[in-house]
Image 1 (cartoon, rainbow over the protein chains, first blue to last red):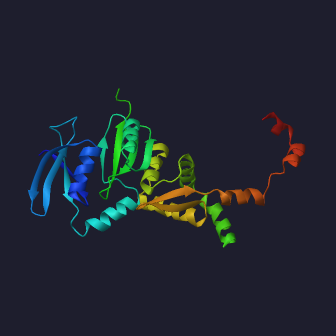
Image 2 (cartoon, chains in turn brown, yellow; image 1 turned 90 degrees about the vertical axis):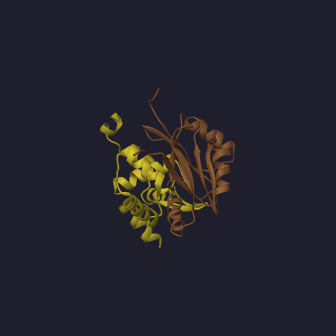
Image 3 (cartoon, rainbow over the protein chains, first blue to last red; image 1 turned 120 degrees about the vertical axis):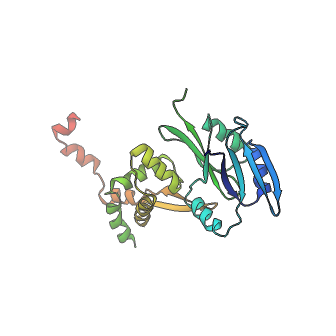
Length: 131
Length: 109
């Protein structure tokens, strides 16, 4: 058993595709139309053979209150690893991305949380002391 | 209304977790529940549940020590110092008197 995919529920797959590729910088691995929606998976440029991120349509009624409650309390839907949270924060702010939590030093990690414009908060995390 | 909120202040700051919450909100204003919980566990070793922290926030808000505001769809928390200032005004430190009555022990500090 392997962990090949992880997913994020998005309001609008095409809008999400744009944000996750053009703004965040991920690369499309699969984009297969499936009726109303599509099977869209992305990979990191840094790990093209690594875990794929599935842009899952947030179609189920239960997803709405679930994500609303997460966003209300500032809870990220998922997290991505970065080498330098400060640098990513600066880069993304310049791209117009809105952060609900600026880079915060929590001792062993530095984290920040931004809005993905598709209904989710996403955390970026840098593990300290890796050098 | 004012009297109730002043009474609550003493109870609110009597709890060490609630004091840590205020410390973190002074460090950065406008935090979500998630950020506060992350700071409490990582910086203070306070591993209380999100529900418990949420209840602490309710007490602090009832005491007027924090206020909340929505930014987009997230609820954020701010420190509000007015109730503590009111304590200082209720029992002002008489600076001149304090100096004249101070003991040798105080002077050594």
